[in-house]
Length: 613
Image: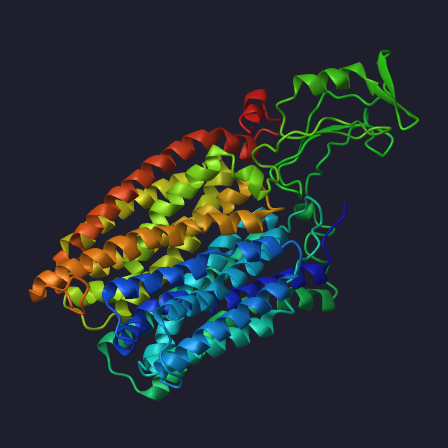
């Protein structure tokens, strides 16, 4: 059996660590709450203009169709390079404007610049997610949870650097967002690359390694929370801040212990992981028996599974080789070559028309009419767009992430309206909770989907039900609710990303996943445009005008009090309830698909195969 060499194992883990660094520096869009008040002041924007600038940020952050189109045509380092240039140009230009190095740009140009800067995230995400999910096809949920979680945690990392090292200087923050992600990305380009897979073999140590990486990430999140709370209530000096930052960097370096350990074991003469050890032996994709010798001159009927590497591939028993003792054989000519097929195979082909994929490998080729892919096979974007499951997933993502990002974008104004003058602690709480939601959602769904074939979307429905209560909590504006609501908002928001990504890959395959993923993420800016750009900003300016008694509807007045965003949160609570209902419908629709893909029985039934259509 073919196994991955130690060098390949180390290479893909180095690539994952480099991807983690890229993602940890890719959360520039989450820093909008920090520099948006300065933009509003320097450029003399009203709240509606500022919210629409936030919409431009969300469009850039989530619309990555070009990156998805190119991910199968160019290497990952090219995507990272384009992303680095995008972030450097976008945030560099904003830094020049805010620091008054250049004259203020027209409003529409500022929207374009904001969009270009935040669009760097889509290039980072596409390059890292697609590459690492293909390198670790057996641990998709965990990989997504770690990588997407670090994007969320990067906001807390940046917030820590902003408040301690950059001394709350918005100009320095924009300069930091211009330079640091660019440098990290350029330094990681050589390491984020695809590694050839060893068929259906899974490294037996892989789960232990992921447990270690997960523990490091959780420890980093706990450390950042402790540091933020310490700096919130205890005055610290610059030297202490540098020490805090150095320890934070050590946490990010810690996962390198995995490839170092793997290479050290090889240097010491220890057998590569999974070789010549009973626990490393994996069951072959095809079941070899004395009756059937599977080779190029024999035929076997195989049901291929959910992905290309054969993770879910299973043989269908009862199919005999053409050279076995069945006297009835069917002959036909193809390109001058005589091909022999047994009638039992032909009958099986007609009976199993509902199987996910039927592949006959025999003494020749059997041409069959092309058919549309079924759930679990590789869809391209055009094929996915005609599936009801795709649009239900899109709508549920729109409801959850659209309302969540609206609350995050307006966090500075929400805190200000409720009498809080320091928004840093709320940004950090949302960031850390967002990370825990992404990491926990990915790991929890991965555990239950493999143990009990529970559809991942069940956890998405629970998160959206929780979001309903979060929005109602924000609307009440009771004392302390902003702290609790920030944590719950971050958890639910993060779960959406850790569930949507592997769910889409399981339903529609990995081959064209870059395009499918980037199309689904368009739901976020659409929700931001509707709830933040049109509803939240408009209602805020109306309430601000009422408070000031002014007749100008879209003036520069500031609104104070719970009423500023109350109606907005009522609307978003209703939208989240609709999303929870549709997610429940999706879970019901695909439950049999997950049962067919992850069931413990080695042979799927006809009803299971029918569900894949």
